Structures are given as structure tokens and as C-alpha cells.
Image (cartoon, rainbow, N blue to C red; front, side, top):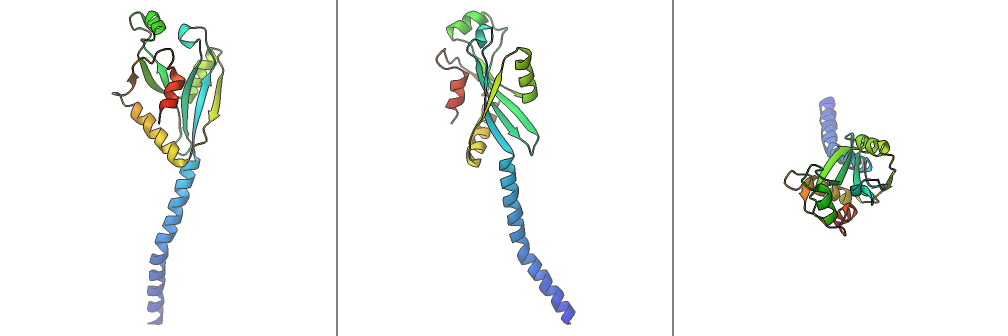
Length: 163
């Protein structure tokens, strides 16, 4: 009888302590997940082509837990569009958000002999989550293409407009 009572007491204690232990693990997992995310601004040196004379910027999203290392690039456009150079000079080029992995992005700039500098953004967990949600929303097919911004609204200003 005593042994049966002790077993019941242990079971009750175990079930009362279980939610507390799970809450601790969940909080630790959230902290680890947040610590594993880094968002950076990439600044790229100017190039020799008309579209790269003033350099470029992009946003890098790294999530070490999920193995993600992606670059969100608002400066993509269709070189095959009719009168591309003329339309570009007039500020009438439609831009598109492109996403690629960092390895390919860096390799392209390395091949072109253009430097890339990375500035890690000091964001809170909520700011990181909001920015990633906005980038994901902007990458939806219906949102990828954005109208010409004109010479006074380049890719770097598109990044600052994400709020």
C-alpha cells in the first residue's frame, strides 16, 4: 500500500513539474532561434556598366538553425526589355525583387572584381521577425515587380522604405 501511494505521489509531482520544464525549454528554444538569425545590409562597390555606376545594396538574411543564407536584391531587372538602356537612363525601368543564396551573390561580385561590405543590423527579435515577414511578402509573385523609382529612389532607398 505504501509503495503504491509513493508511486502515485511521484506521478502527480512529475505531471505538475512537466509544464514548468517544458516552458523553460520553449523559452530557451526561442532565445536560441533568435540568436541564430542575423540580418545585414550589403553594400556593393560601383561597377562599369550604366546600371552599376553608383553601386548597389541588398539585404542578407542568415538563419543558422535552418541553414538559410539568402540575399534579397531589389535591383533586379530585365536586360532584354525593349530599349533597356534608354528606359534606365530615364528612370523608367521596372525593377524586380530577386532572392539568391549568399554564396552565388558573393561569387558574382567577386567575379566582377567588385567589393561587398556587410553591416549587421542591430535589430530586436520583433524587428527581425517583422523584416523577414515583409521581405517574404514582397517576394510573392504578385509583389516582386515594383515600378520605376526614378534616379532619386534607388535600391538603397527601397530598403529604407521597408517598414
